[in-house]
Length: 427
Image (cartoon, rainbow, N blue to C red; front, top):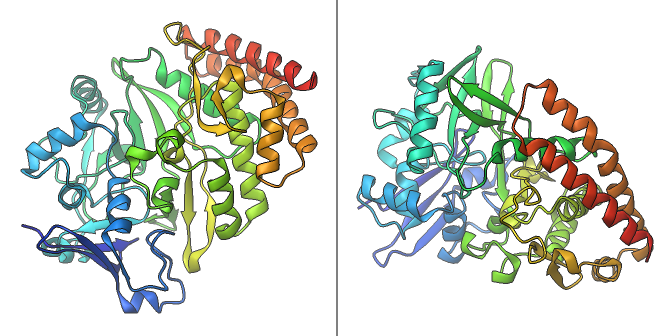
């Protein structure tokens, strides 16, 4: 049984996770890392001012690196002969490429990871990528082919794979070489979800919100939304991991509680965290609140705490990460919009249709903001959104995207934005 994992942050040994005989975990920072001028924490929930952090802090962090999908976790558990209920045991096998700068490495693998020899990269042609995407649609846990050396883990419920893109080639990296892009094929549950997500991200960008770079790509007869990882950076000729954590990890809350009504962080919690920790708190709070308004306007009902993240830099510099995993339920007739709810309550209300000016005023009061200014901002964003919908729709056409969900989504979003602005202005 594995008793210890080494934590690397962008290739630097920073600490270790130790499992005792009862299965309880402790995270212990290296003293050398704690004393480094450019040191930063593994998580805001585990500050480097303390050398050791208990199971209640490190276990939710590890769970936050794993998929929110029991089928995937179950298949991985069978593959690696471990328990699907044990985050430490799963991360021991898939933790060498995670979200952020962290790698969790078995001690026996440490020299191979840090060694001078370049790890192998398996380069893939378009046919092989299509084969992998097809396998992923059929088996949600087929994130890697059986022969692959490099393993990775990403949070979220959707099936996905992660690859390296370098010199106009796609490949499967391993060891210290990170993946650079996330590829998500259609899930089958919601038709046109890839185009939906791409449209909503580009519409958010048009409003001035920071978002991940995305595009829809075809690999033979397969399609995927391809996301460039914001937690990777190229410096000169080298690829580096950039540290980040989602809001659940920052609060040491397990992913099973990512929704506020299940015990997860709400708007006021996240605003408070940004106010206390962000290097530019006013800017990040304004961006976060704009994103809350945006998700309300587009009926983005999955904007829970795991879909907001923090970038953590040298010396503990903290910023709100770009938006990701943004999509609308509006184009799906099977979803009753009358019953749809936001993930974080607005002025005490979850249900989309019930959120009125008074709820925005109440939220502003909770955050000690000017209620009139808050309502003006909601109205302003609704107006801008309605103005930009047709432009983004045309952008999708120019990119060669023809899925019927695009005009349906554009029409529904424009209609809801106009109605929302009218309702706000009637206040």
